[in-house]
Length: 295
Image 1 (cartoon, rainbow, N blue to C red):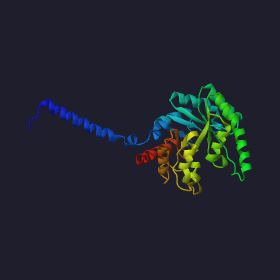
Image 2 (cartoon, rainbow, N blue to C red; image 1 turned 90 degrees about the vertical axis):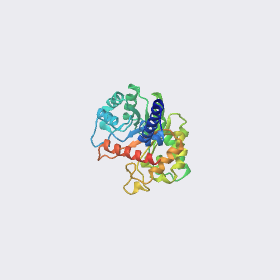
Image 3 (cartoon, one colour; image 1 turned 90 degrees about the horizontal axis):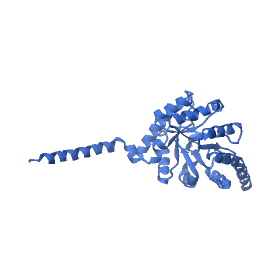
Image 4 (cartoon, rainbow, N blue to C red; image 1 turned 135 degrees about the horizontal axis):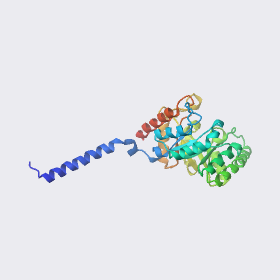
């Protein structure tokens, strides 16, 4: 069979383009098949400051995040880090790291005002993550009083945050305050537009059976979800903190998050003081990639 040369070249060209398409499509299956919510650009590093066995400083930490392919940081700290608050923001700015959130005291004490001053000085608008606790209330009257007390505690923080363009995230850390329904009540009672919810899977083991229901309730207020490897009752069996992919519940949880249509930030955890944060966060990123393929 005889081909004209132009027709032969055209056929070879089409065949080559098809082959290239196959290889390009096969080169990044996670990116092709997974929701944008779990992309690197939407991931926020969390618990990588006091939990880092290498005790990195601001510059080293920013460089580590760049190596990991992350560009967002939720900054947790201890008293020893207060002198480097300015340096932390400056290092993030130099390396293009967004300061997505800042761990914040439970009241407007001296440290809280120091943080607000630093953020205002650097014109940094971020989320202030605030927690609380408390034993479960036993009567409607006690619940009502607790709600009033929490609103009174949080209002000055939220108003101070609003003055410098920041938001406040109510951070579940167990207890009465850690129940999403109670946080929603607080937000509604406050009546302020700059208050939302930060939900941590590692503090939500008791919520596993009704996570889909809770996510639907939280969604209008939810700023971020921090991921964790999860097994049933892990917080009671020495498995509270697991790498992503080590549990048997997180695939289902990720699917619920994906299918919900919620579009907030997703936190990647360290929270292992005995290890290098780069190693722990890296393991969680690889675990997330493997889970994404299954989505």
